Length: 477
Image (cartoon, rainbow, N blue to C red; front, side, top):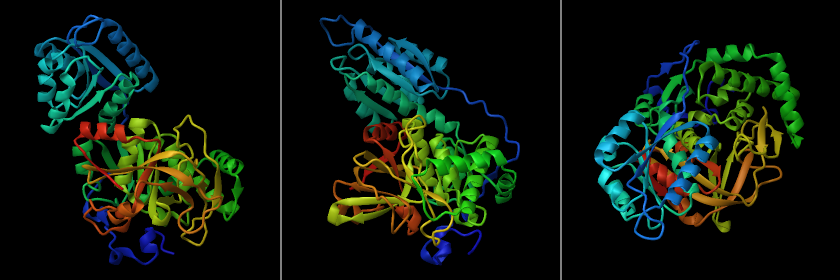
């Protein structure tokens, strides 16, 4: 067994199999043992009410009661989300808007509330000129300004439209708007090589387009953390995983101890480096020391995305959705069954808390890794049958591949493929399979194969996010 190989290298594919060793093509900033202290503040969002309140019984516009309801729902959302700071203002002229933008600071995205007919179109110029991402919330009959938002988008501005009587859409707007400043404060750790699309594997491009920092970690740094792992924490991790498991099949006590030690070390690494996400390009090389899969599950459950096989596209996808939905993603391989109009997703690492950190943990088995003779210790997580899911991936830093489905089967005990498996009914499996990854110009199997699954139908939020970030959406299937 090679100690520093990827899965495809392990099985003899390597470069001859089309593997894109993207990490070799890029230089990385390397993580220091004493990273600078980071002051994680709340993400500031400007909320701008445009125009004057209108009478409740006539005219096109929002009345005082509606505006009070909007303000109350915004206050509720600010408290509920916890990591945003709303700066609320009013504008009746472009000069008012300019003054408001100065107050919010240079990078704050804007939520514009349509209050009076054609007031938004009169005052929005400075926001568009500044290139600020802007979500427009428009109640029915609050004015005709809503119809200009798609026109601004088509003109190249980053604008999302939420035209609805549902005040909960205000929270949706804040969730997608906060993604942009949160990405700009993100620190990603990478054990090279990075893999995926060329742009996603470039720290410079990730910084330029998304604002996140990517720093590399040397294997020795982590080896030292494994060796120094707190024994009491390792014992607690072993106990938690073994007591919580429905069944323990292949793993030996040594396998579980090694995986638990890696989990504790990963937790320490993320805290030490003050990191928000992790990608490991040498997962399979860790086998002699212990599998990272239990640790990945723990990190994702804590709200810290962790990607297998150095897959930067999947990692960035998990970050976008974590920030927008507070839910972790299940990164996995795809395989089709057109006879059942179904798409499977399978991998040997998966979060337990797909509903988010405060949700219930899914049932799981402890299994050996399916592709290396059943050795090691990985979770086989049994997700909820009947759950609607969104399957997606950001690729090339400019395109989101997305589809929805419903989980129709989860095996009692997985065979063939990776351990955690879901079978999802999709709209048109045959068309989906025929067009799979057609937007990608690569022959690398991993880059073509992986998608990330999230509980819930997030297509509307995804489209809003794409509009605000200047991304293209391609719906698969």
